[in-house]
Image: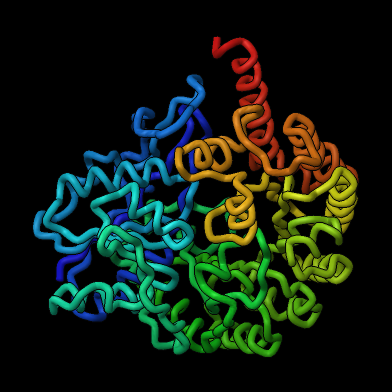
Amino acid sequence: MRVCLIRPPKLMIKNAASVVSFPPLGMALIAAALKDRGHTVQVIDAAVSGDGGCHDFDASQIHGSLPAQNALVTSGLSFDAITASIHPDTELIGFSCMFSIDWVSDRALINAVSARYPHATLIAGGESATGMPQVFLTQCPGLAACVLGEGEETVTDLIDALASGRPLSTVSGIMLRSDGAYIKTEKRERMRKLDDIPVPAWEEFPVELYPRPLRRADAPNPITLPLIATRGCPFRCTFCTSPDMWGTRYYLRSPQSVADEIAMVQQRFQAGNFDFFDLTAIIKKKWILEFSQILRDRQLDILWRFPAGTRSEAIDEEVVKALSSSGCHEIIYAPESGSERVLEMIKKKVNIPNMLQSMRYAKKHGMRIYINMIIGLPGERHSDIFRTCWFLIQCARVGVNDVGLAKFRPYPGSALFDQLHEQGRISLDTDDYFVDSLFLVDSILLNKFYNPEIKSDRLYMLYYFLYLGSFYSAQCLFQFGNFRAILRDGTMYRYGANLKKDITSKLRNWTGGK
Protein backbone atom coordinates (compact mmCIF):
# COMPACT_ATOMS: atom_id res chain seq x y z
CA MET A 1 0.00 0.00 0.00
CA ARG A 2 1.13 3.58 -0.62
CA VAL A 3 1.36 5.42 2.70
CA CYS A 4 2.10 9.04 3.56
CA LEU A 5 3.22 9.97 7.09
CA ILE A 6 2.96 13.63 8.10
CA ARG A 7 4.35 15.53 11.05
CA PRO A 8 2.38 18.81 11.15
CA PRO A 9 4.12 22.20 11.45
CA LYS A 10 4.42 23.89 14.84
CA LEU A 11 1.95 26.53 16.01
CA MET A 12 3.52 29.76 17.27
CA ILE A 13 2.66 33.30 18.28
CA LYS A 14 3.80 35.68 15.57
CA ASN A 15 7.22 37.22 16.21
CA ALA A 16 7.96 34.74 18.99
CA ALA A 17 11.28 32.97 19.20
CA SER A 18 11.57 30.11 16.71
CA VAL A 19 10.52 26.63 17.76
CA VAL A 20 13.15 23.89 17.80
CA SER A 21 11.80 20.70 16.23
CA PHE A 22 13.74 17.57 17.01
CA PRO A 23 13.76 14.51 14.74
CA PRO A 24 10.43 12.61 15.09
CA LEU A 25 11.65 9.25 16.37
CA GLY A 26 8.19 7.68 16.63
CA MET A 27 7.34 8.50 13.03
CA ALA A 28 10.71 7.15 11.87
CA LEU A 29 9.99 3.87 13.67
CA ILE A 30 6.53 3.64 12.06
CA ALA A 31 8.07 4.30 8.64
CA ALA A 32 10.63 1.55 9.22
CA ALA A 33 7.94 -0.95 10.26
CA LEU A 34 5.88 -0.17 7.15
CA LYS A 35 8.86 -0.42 4.81
CA ASP A 36 9.81 -3.71 6.43
CA ARG A 37 6.35 -4.99 5.41
CA GLY A 38 6.88 -3.88 1.80
CA HIS A 39 4.73 -0.74 1.83
CA THR A 40 5.72 2.41 -0.07
CA VAL A 41 6.25 5.20 2.43
CA GLN A 42 6.35 8.95 1.81
CA VAL A 43 7.37 11.17 4.73
CA ILE A 44 6.49 14.86 5.05
CA ASP A 45 8.18 16.38 8.08
CA ALA A 46 6.40 19.71 7.83
CA ALA A 47 7.96 21.03 11.05
CA VAL A 48 11.35 21.46 9.36
CA SER A 49 10.74 21.13 5.62
CA GLY A 50 10.24 24.03 3.25
CA ASP A 51 11.92 27.39 3.56
CA GLY A 52 11.80 27.29 7.35
CA GLY A 53 9.58 30.36 7.40
CA CYS A 54 6.30 31.12 9.13
CA HIS A 55 2.83 31.13 7.62
CA ASP A 56 -0.23 32.97 8.90
CA PHE A 57 -2.76 30.78 10.68
CA ASP A 58 -6.44 31.59 10.33
CA ALA A 59 -7.52 32.20 13.92
CA SER A 60 -11.19 31.97 12.89
CA GLN A 61 -10.66 28.20 12.98
CA ILE A 62 -10.27 28.42 16.75
CA HIS A 63 -13.52 27.65 18.58
CA GLY A 64 -13.09 30.10 21.41
CA SER A 65 -11.44 33.37 22.35
CA LEU A 66 -7.94 34.45 21.39
CA PRO A 67 -6.51 37.82 22.46
CA ALA A 68 -6.20 40.08 19.44
CA GLN A 69 -2.53 40.83 19.99
CA ASN A 70 -1.58 37.15 19.67
CA ALA A 71 -1.60 36.60 15.91
CA LEU A 72 -0.74 32.98 15.14
CA VAL A 73 1.59 31.43 12.60
CA THR A 74 2.77 27.94 11.76
CA SER A 75 6.49 27.28 11.50
CA GLY A 76 7.67 25.02 8.68
CA LEU A 77 5.85 23.88 5.58
CA SER A 78 2.57 25.65 4.72
CA PHE A 79 -0.72 23.74 4.65
CA ASP A 80 -1.00 24.27 0.88
CA ALA A 81 2.51 22.93 0.33
CA ILE A 82 1.78 19.89 2.49
CA THR A 83 -1.42 18.94 0.67
CA ALA A 84 0.25 19.51 -2.69
CA SER A 85 3.18 17.26 -1.71
CA ILE A 86 1.08 14.18 -0.98
CA HIS A 87 1.29 11.63 -3.80
CA PRO A 88 -2.11 11.53 -5.56
CA ASP A 89 -2.28 7.72 -5.33
CA THR A 90 -1.76 7.63 -1.56
CA GLU A 91 -4.14 5.18 0.11
CA LEU A 92 -3.37 5.80 3.78
CA ILE A 93 -2.36 9.12 5.37
CA GLY A 94 -1.09 9.05 8.93
CA PHE A 95 -0.60 12.12 11.15
CA SER A 96 1.90 12.14 14.00
CA CYS A 97 0.29 14.31 16.70
CA MET A 98 2.52 14.36 19.75
CA PHE A 99 1.69 17.62 21.51
CA SER A 100 -1.79 18.82 22.45
CA ILE A 101 -0.49 22.38 22.47
CA ASP A 102 -0.59 22.18 18.64
CA TRP A 103 -4.08 20.69 18.43
CA VAL A 104 -5.88 23.68 16.86
CA SER A 105 -3.41 23.75 13.95
CA ASP A 106 -3.13 19.95 13.72
CA ARG A 107 -6.91 19.80 13.41
CA ALA A 108 -6.95 22.41 10.66
CA LEU A 109 -4.32 20.48 8.70
CA ILE A 110 -6.11 17.13 9.09
CA ASN A 111 -9.36 18.65 7.85
CA ALA A 112 -7.60 20.35 4.91
CA VAL A 113 -5.95 17.08 3.85
CA SER A 114 -9.23 15.20 4.27
CA ALA A 115 -10.99 17.62 1.91
CA ARG A 116 -8.20 17.31 -0.67
CA TYR A 117 -7.88 13.49 -0.51
CA PRO A 118 -11.37 12.08 0.23
CA HIS A 119 -10.39 8.72 -1.28
CA ALA A 120 -7.60 8.10 1.26
CA THR A 121 -7.97 6.59 4.73
CA LEU A 122 -6.79 9.04 7.39
CA ILE A 123 -5.48 8.03 10.82
CA ALA A 124 -3.73 9.84 13.66
CA GLY A 125 -1.38 8.65 16.39
CA GLY A 126 1.01 9.93 19.02
CA GLU A 127 0.61 11.09 22.62
CA SER A 128 -1.97 13.76 21.81
CA ALA A 129 -4.15 11.36 19.80
CA THR A 130 -3.80 8.71 22.50
CA GLY A 131 -4.74 11.16 25.25
CA MET A 132 -7.91 12.52 23.59
CA PRO A 133 -8.94 10.24 20.69
CA GLN A 134 -12.63 11.14 20.91
CA VAL A 135 -11.79 14.83 20.46
CA PHE A 136 -9.78 13.94 17.36
CA LEU A 137 -12.58 11.87 15.84
CA THR A 138 -15.28 14.40 16.73
CA GLN A 139 -13.51 17.46 15.38
CA CYS A 140 -11.96 15.73 12.36
CA PRO A 141 -14.76 13.82 10.60
CA GLY A 142 -12.34 12.66 7.93
CA LEU A 143 -10.33 10.59 10.40
CA ALA A 144 -11.08 6.88 10.26
CA ALA A 145 -9.29 5.96 13.50
CA CYS A 146 -6.85 7.02 16.18
CA VAL A 147 -3.94 4.72 17.01
CA LEU A 148 -3.52 4.38 20.77
CA GLY A 149 -0.07 3.90 22.29
CA GLU A 150 2.68 2.03 20.45
CA GLY A 151 2.05 2.27 16.75
CA GLU A 152 4.25 -0.10 14.77
CA GLU A 153 2.14 -3.25 15.03
CA THR A 154 -1.16 -1.40 15.17
CA VAL A 155 -0.58 0.56 11.95
CA THR A 156 0.60 -2.50 10.02
CA ASP A 157 -2.40 -4.48 11.28
CA LEU A 158 -4.72 -1.62 10.29
CA ILE A 159 -3.27 -1.59 6.75
CA ASP A 160 -3.71 -5.36 6.51
CA ALA A 161 -7.36 -4.92 7.50
CA LEU A 162 -7.89 -2.26 4.83
CA ALA A 163 -6.20 -4.39 2.16
CA SER A 164 -8.24 -7.50 2.99
CA GLY A 165 -11.55 -5.73 3.58
CA ARG A 166 -11.56 -6.75 7.23
CA PRO A 167 -13.51 -4.37 9.53
CA LEU A 168 -11.33 -1.90 11.41
CA SER A 169 -13.14 -2.96 14.58
CA THR A 170 -11.03 -6.14 14.45
CA VAL A 171 -7.82 -4.11 14.80
CA SER A 172 -6.61 -3.95 18.39
CA GLY A 173 -5.37 -0.70 19.89
CA ILE A 174 -7.47 1.92 18.10
CA MET A 175 -10.55 4.12 18.61
CA LEU A 176 -13.03 4.56 15.78
CA ARG A 177 -16.62 5.57 15.11
CA SER A 178 -19.31 2.93 14.99
CA ASP A 179 -23.01 3.66 14.46
CA GLY A 180 -22.67 7.18 15.80
CA ALA A 181 -20.68 6.09 18.86
CA TYR A 182 -16.97 5.97 19.64
CA ILE A 183 -15.50 2.63 20.56
CA LYS A 184 -12.09 1.51 21.71
CA THR A 185 -11.12 -1.84 20.31
CA GLU A 186 -9.39 -4.48 22.39
CA LYS A 187 -6.19 -3.19 23.97
CA ARG A 188 -3.12 -4.28 22.08
CA GLU A 189 -0.43 -6.14 23.96
CA ARG A 190 2.82 -4.27 24.45
CA MET A 191 5.75 -5.03 22.20
CA ARG A 192 8.30 -7.05 24.16
CA LYS A 193 10.95 -8.14 21.67
CA LEU A 194 12.40 -4.67 21.22
CA ASP A 195 15.55 -5.97 19.53
CA ASP A 196 13.39 -7.10 16.59
CA ILE A 197 12.05 -3.61 15.88
CA PRO A 198 13.57 -2.22 12.64
CA VAL A 199 16.02 0.66 12.92
CA PRO A 200 14.30 4.05 12.37
CA ALA A 201 14.00 4.88 8.66
CA TRP A 202 16.01 8.11 8.81
CA GLU A 203 16.68 7.80 5.08
CA GLU A 204 13.16 9.13 4.54
CA PHE A 205 13.74 12.22 6.69
CA PRO A 206 15.64 15.50 6.12
CA VAL A 207 18.26 14.75 8.77
CA GLU A 208 20.44 17.59 7.52
CA LEU A 209 17.72 20.12 8.46
CA TYR A 210 17.35 19.17 12.10
CA PRO A 211 18.81 21.64 14.60
CA ARG A 212 22.41 21.34 15.67
CA PRO A 213 22.56 21.15 19.46
CA LEU A 214 24.34 23.88 21.38
CA ARG A 215 27.61 23.40 23.25
CA ARG A 216 28.82 20.49 21.16
CA ALA A 217 31.47 22.20 19.12
CA ASP A 218 33.83 19.31 19.90
CA ALA A 219 31.46 16.78 18.32
CA PRO A 220 32.96 14.73 15.46
CA ASN A 221 29.89 15.52 13.35
CA PRO A 222 27.14 18.00 14.23
CA ILE A 223 24.21 15.83 13.02
CA THR A 224 22.21 14.60 16.01
CA LEU A 225 19.65 11.80 15.95
CA PRO A 226 17.56 10.27 18.74
CA LEU A 227 17.14 6.68 19.84
CA ILE A 228 15.57 4.74 22.68
CA ALA A 229 16.87 1.78 24.66
CA THR A 230 13.69 1.15 26.66
CA ARG A 231 9.93 1.38 26.45
CA GLY A 232 7.50 2.09 29.22
CA CYS A 233 8.13 3.53 32.66
CA PRO A 234 7.39 1.74 35.95
CA PHE A 235 6.49 5.01 37.67
CA ARG A 236 3.15 6.85 37.68
CA CYS A 237 3.93 10.57 37.88
CA THR A 238 0.54 12.30 37.82
CA PHE A 239 1.57 15.06 35.38
CA CYS A 240 2.96 12.59 32.81
CA THR A 241 1.16 10.94 29.89
CA SER A 242 3.49 7.92 29.83
CA PRO A 243 1.21 5.47 31.71
CA ASP A 244 -1.54 6.13 29.14
CA MET A 245 0.75 6.18 26.09
CA TRP A 246 3.28 3.45 26.89
CA GLY A 247 2.09 1.67 30.02
CA THR A 248 4.04 0.93 33.18
CA ARG A 249 5.63 -2.34 32.03
CA TYR A 250 9.31 -1.62 31.45
CA TYR A 251 11.14 -3.36 28.62
CA LEU A 252 14.82 -3.08 27.72
CA ARG A 253 16.64 -3.62 24.46
CA SER A 254 19.91 -5.48 24.70
CA PRO A 255 23.01 -3.26 25.01
CA GLN A 256 24.38 -4.87 21.84
CA SER A 257 21.26 -3.94 19.85
CA VAL A 258 21.49 -0.28 20.87
CA ALA A 259 25.20 -0.14 20.05
CA ASP A 260 24.53 -1.76 16.66
CA GLU A 261 21.95 0.93 15.87
CA ILE A 262 24.37 3.71 16.83
CA ALA A 263 27.10 2.26 14.64
CA MET A 264 24.75 1.84 11.67
CA VAL A 265 23.26 5.32 11.96
CA GLN A 266 26.71 6.84 12.39
CA GLN A 267 27.94 5.17 9.21
CA ARG A 268 24.85 5.76 7.04
CA PHE A 269 23.94 9.28 8.10
CA GLN A 270 27.23 10.63 9.46
CA ALA A 271 25.64 11.33 12.83
CA GLY A 272 28.08 12.21 15.58
CA ASN A 273 25.63 12.96 18.40
CA PHE A 274 22.92 10.77 19.88
CA ASP A 275 20.11 11.77 22.25
CA PHE A 276 18.34 9.07 24.24
CA PHE A 277 14.61 9.83 24.37
CA ASP A 278 13.86 7.26 27.09
CA LEU A 279 11.51 8.16 29.91
CA THR A 280 13.61 6.31 32.45
CA ALA A 281 16.88 5.22 30.91
CA ILE A 282 18.44 3.47 33.89
CA ILE A 283 16.69 0.86 35.98
CA LYS A 284 19.40 -1.79 35.94
CA LYS A 285 22.93 -0.67 36.72
CA LYS A 286 24.35 -3.77 35.06
CA TRP A 287 22.77 -2.78 31.73
CA ILE A 288 24.29 0.70 31.55
CA LEU A 289 27.73 -0.58 32.56
CA GLU A 290 27.62 -3.24 29.85
CA PHE A 291 26.42 -0.74 27.26
CA SER A 292 29.19 1.72 28.12
CA GLN A 293 31.76 -1.05 27.84
CA ILE A 294 30.51 -2.03 24.37
CA LEU A 295 30.83 1.58 23.18
CA ARG A 296 34.36 1.78 24.55
CA ASP A 297 35.34 -1.53 22.92
CA ARG A 298 34.00 -0.36 19.55
CA GLN A 299 35.80 2.98 19.87
CA LEU A 300 32.91 4.83 18.23
CA ASP A 301 33.74 8.50 17.74
CA ILE A 302 30.47 9.87 19.11
CA LEU A 303 28.98 12.04 21.84
CA TRP A 304 25.71 11.11 23.52
CA ARG A 305 23.44 12.22 26.34
CA PHE A 306 20.59 10.59 28.19
CA PRO A 307 17.84 11.34 30.72
CA ALA A 308 18.33 9.97 34.21
CA GLY A 309 14.58 9.69 34.65
CA THR A 310 13.44 8.87 38.16
CA ARG A 311 16.10 6.38 39.25
CA SER A 312 18.90 8.90 39.80
CA GLU A 313 20.23 6.86 42.72
CA ALA A 314 21.33 4.26 40.16
CA ILE A 315 23.79 6.80 38.77
CA ASP A 316 26.58 6.37 41.27
CA GLU A 317 30.24 7.19 40.71
CA GLU A 318 30.96 3.88 39.00
CA VAL A 319 28.16 4.47 36.50
CA VAL A 320 29.16 8.10 35.87
CA LYS A 321 32.76 7.11 35.23
CA ALA A 322 31.65 4.45 32.75
CA LEU A 323 29.30 6.88 30.98
CA SER A 324 31.94 9.57 30.65
CA SER A 325 34.55 7.20 29.24
CA SER A 326 32.11 6.00 26.53
CA GLY A 327 31.25 9.43 25.09
CA CYS A 328 28.31 10.49 27.28
CA HIS A 329 28.79 14.18 27.97
CA GLU A 330 25.46 15.27 29.50
CA ILE A 331 22.92 13.86 31.93
CA ILE A 332 19.39 15.24 32.17
CA TYR A 333 17.91 14.95 35.65
CA ALA A 334 14.20 15.46 36.30
CA PRO A 335 13.60 16.35 39.95
CA GLU A 336 10.53 18.48 38.95
CA SER A 337 10.34 20.04 42.45
CA GLY A 338 12.55 20.68 45.45
CA SER A 339 9.68 19.99 47.84
CA GLU A 340 9.32 16.50 49.27
CA ARG A 341 5.61 17.20 49.84
CA VAL A 342 5.03 18.04 46.17
CA LEU A 343 7.07 15.05 45.01
CA GLU A 344 4.90 12.75 47.10
CA MET A 345 1.76 14.50 45.84
CA ILE A 346 2.66 13.98 42.16
CA LYS A 347 4.02 10.44 42.82
CA LYS A 348 7.52 11.38 41.71
CA LYS A 349 9.80 8.80 43.30
CA VAL A 350 12.83 11.04 43.76
CA ASN A 351 15.21 11.22 46.70
CA ILE A 352 16.63 14.75 46.64
CA PRO A 353 19.83 14.09 48.67
CA ASN A 354 20.62 11.05 46.49
CA MET A 355 20.05 13.07 43.33
CA LEU A 356 22.36 15.85 44.50
CA GLN A 357 25.03 13.27 45.29
CA SER A 358 24.62 11.77 41.81
CA MET A 359 25.07 15.26 40.34
CA ARG A 360 28.30 15.67 42.30
CA TYR A 361 29.64 12.46 40.79
CA ALA A 362 28.64 13.69 37.32
CA LYS A 363 30.48 16.98 37.76
CA LYS A 364 33.53 15.21 39.16
CA HIS A 365 33.84 13.30 35.88
CA GLY A 366 33.29 16.29 33.60
CA MET A 367 29.61 15.89 32.74
CA ARG A 368 27.23 18.68 31.79
CA ILE A 369 24.05 18.60 33.86
CA TYR A 370 20.61 19.82 32.83
CA ILE A 371 17.60 19.62 35.14
CA ASN A 372 13.84 19.81 34.50
CA MET A 373 11.52 21.54 36.97
CA ILE A 374 7.79 22.38 37.10
CA ILE A 375 6.10 25.29 38.87
CA GLY A 376 2.37 25.83 39.47
CA LEU A 377 1.32 22.23 40.08
CA PRO A 378 -2.15 21.85 41.66
CA GLY A 379 -1.74 21.83 45.41
CA GLU A 380 1.70 23.44 45.38
CA ARG A 381 2.13 26.12 48.07
CA HIS A 382 4.40 29.12 48.48
CA SER A 383 6.42 27.14 51.00
CA ASP A 384 6.98 24.41 48.40
CA ILE A 385 8.28 26.96 45.90
CA PHE A 386 10.70 28.32 48.49
CA ARG A 387 11.97 24.76 49.03
CA THR A 388 12.43 24.52 45.27
CA CYS A 389 14.33 27.81 45.44
CA TRP A 390 16.72 26.34 48.00
CA PHE A 391 17.10 23.17 45.93
CA LEU A 392 18.07 25.24 42.87
CA ILE A 393 20.69 27.07 44.90
CA GLN A 394 22.08 23.69 45.94
CA CYS A 395 22.08 22.59 42.29
CA ALA A 396 24.01 25.72 41.30
CA ARG A 397 26.56 25.02 44.02
CA VAL A 398 26.94 21.41 42.83
CA GLY A 399 27.67 22.72 39.33
CA VAL A 400 24.45 22.18 37.37
CA ASN A 401 24.86 23.88 33.98
CA ASP A 402 21.29 24.77 33.10
CA VAL A 403 17.69 24.38 34.19
CA GLY A 404 14.42 24.08 32.29
CA LEU A 405 11.60 25.49 34.40
CA ALA A 406 8.15 24.77 32.99
CA LYS A 407 4.81 26.16 34.09
CA PHE A 408 2.37 23.34 34.73
CA ARG A 409 0.24 22.31 31.77
CA PRO A 410 -2.42 19.57 32.22
CA TYR A 411 -1.91 17.30 29.22
CA PRO A 412 -4.64 14.89 28.05
CA GLY A 413 -3.74 11.37 29.08
CA SER A 414 -2.21 12.39 32.41
CA ALA A 415 -3.78 11.65 35.80
CA LEU A 416 -3.89 15.36 36.69
CA PHE A 417 -5.74 16.17 33.47
CA ASP A 418 -8.31 13.46 34.18
CA GLN A 419 -8.76 14.77 37.72
CA LEU A 420 -9.26 18.38 36.58
CA HIS A 421 -11.60 17.28 33.79
CA GLU A 422 -13.74 15.23 36.19
CA GLN A 423 -13.93 18.25 38.51
CA GLY A 424 -15.28 20.34 35.64
CA ARG A 425 -12.25 22.65 35.70
CA ILE A 426 -11.32 21.65 32.15
CA SER A 427 -13.85 21.63 29.31
CA LEU A 428 -13.13 20.44 25.79
CA ASP A 429 -16.35 21.87 24.35
CA THR A 430 -14.40 24.87 23.01
CA ASP A 431 -10.73 25.56 22.32
CA ASP A 432 -10.29 27.73 25.41
CA TYR A 433 -8.44 24.94 27.21
CA PHE A 434 -5.99 24.47 24.32
CA VAL A 435 -5.43 28.21 24.00
CA ASP A 436 -5.39 29.35 27.63
CA SER A 437 -4.08 26.29 29.47
CA LEU A 438 -1.56 25.04 26.93
CA PHE A 439 -0.66 27.49 24.19
CA LEU A 440 -0.67 30.83 26.06
CA VAL A 441 0.54 29.55 29.42
CA ASP A 442 3.73 31.59 29.00
CA SER A 443 1.88 34.91 28.56
CA ILE A 444 0.99 36.97 31.62
CA LEU A 445 -2.77 37.16 32.34
CA LEU A 446 -3.57 35.45 29.03
CA ASN A 447 -3.93 31.94 30.36
CA LYS A 448 -5.55 29.72 32.95
CA PHE A 449 -3.89 28.09 35.92
CA TYR A 450 -5.08 25.27 38.17
CA ASN A 451 -3.47 26.22 41.46
CA PRO A 452 -5.80 28.27 43.69
CA GLU A 453 -3.01 28.56 46.27
CA ILE A 454 -1.01 31.02 44.13
CA LYS A 455 -2.31 33.91 42.04
CA SER A 456 -1.14 33.97 38.42
CA ASP A 457 0.73 37.28 38.73
CA ARG A 458 2.55 36.04 41.78
CA LEU A 459 3.31 32.77 40.04
CA TYR A 460 5.07 34.67 37.27
CA MET A 461 7.08 36.65 39.77
CA LEU A 462 8.12 33.40 41.46
CA TYR A 463 8.87 31.85 38.07
CA TYR A 464 11.44 34.49 37.17
CA PHE A 465 12.69 34.63 40.75
CA LEU A 466 13.51 30.92 40.59
CA TYR A 467 15.32 31.44 37.29
CA LEU A 468 17.15 34.69 37.90
CA GLY A 469 17.07 35.37 41.62
CA SER A 470 17.73 31.78 42.64
CA PHE A 471 19.48 29.53 40.14
CA TYR A 472 21.40 31.92 37.90
CA SER A 473 22.36 34.27 40.72
CA ALA A 474 23.69 31.34 42.72
CA GLN A 475 25.41 30.00 39.62
CA CYS A 476 27.12 33.36 39.14
CA LEU A 477 28.31 33.17 42.74
CA PHE A 478 29.45 29.55 42.80
CA GLN A 479 30.59 28.92 39.21
CA PHE A 480 31.28 32.22 37.49
CA GLY A 481 33.05 30.59 34.54
CA ASN A 482 29.98 28.56 33.64
CA PHE A 483 27.77 31.62 34.06
CA ARG A 484 29.88 33.45 31.48
CA ALA A 485 29.43 30.49 29.11
CA ILE A 486 25.64 30.77 29.52
CA LEU A 487 25.82 34.44 28.64
CA ARG A 488 27.83 33.58 25.53
CA ASP A 489 25.43 30.88 24.28
CA GLY A 490 22.42 33.18 24.66
CA THR A 491 20.47 31.39 27.40
CA MET A 492 20.10 34.49 29.57
CA TYR A 493 19.26 36.57 26.50
CA ARG A 494 16.41 34.21 25.66
CA TYR A 495 14.97 34.42 29.16
CA GLY A 496 15.32 38.19 29.09
CA ALA A 497 13.53 38.30 25.73
CA ASN A 498 10.72 36.13 27.10
CA LEU A 499 10.36 38.41 30.12
CA LYS A 500 10.16 41.43 27.81
CA LYS A 501 7.44 39.73 25.75
CA ASP A 502 5.50 38.86 28.91
CA ILE A 503 5.61 42.45 30.16
CA THR A 504 4.62 43.80 26.73
CA SER A 505 1.71 41.34 26.58
CA LYS A 506 0.53 42.42 30.03
CA LEU A 507 0.64 46.10 29.10
CA ARG A 508 -1.38 45.40 25.95
CA ASN A 509 -3.96 43.55 28.01
CA TRP A 510 -4.30 46.50 30.38
CA THR A 511 -4.59 49.02 27.51
CA GLY A 512 -7.07 47.04 25.46
CA GLY A 513 -4.50 45.74 22.96
CA LYS A 514 -3.09 49.14 21.99
